[in-house]
Length: 183
Image (cartoon, rainbow, N blue to C red; front, side, top):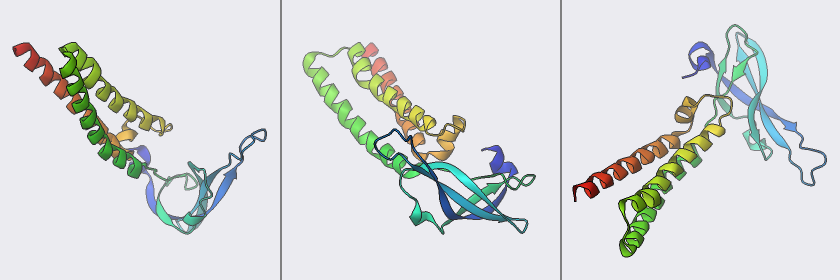
């Protein structure tokens, strides 16, 4: 949990417009981005702030929508809107296990035909799945540059799924090692 979530007041804000950030003039294509302008009322005074999330398309459809805003009670001009990337991360976290299962079965069949050793199974099956999970969680972290690593798990619900899958792949590798060594 962040400082603003525990120490700031919660109000409802309304998207009242957007700011245009112009891309480089030398660029052949327009690289404009847009930040939402959010209006809110705190202690009977109206304030506005520009959200830090950049949109690549004009967010005209968001004008008039309301959202939860955190306001600093000592400095009401400072406000924060919490952002998430839940939908894409959850979808990818649902699809990934199926892809990992297909990959694992395919590699097991391939290694079975070619006489796969424990080292080959660890390097070809379990290590890539684990590294894929870790890389995805780190990519989620890159998407939250102003927040700490714990923001990945509080803001991106799919990150928990990837962490679980990474743990399951490590557990499967451990079981594989134990079973192979008992033979």
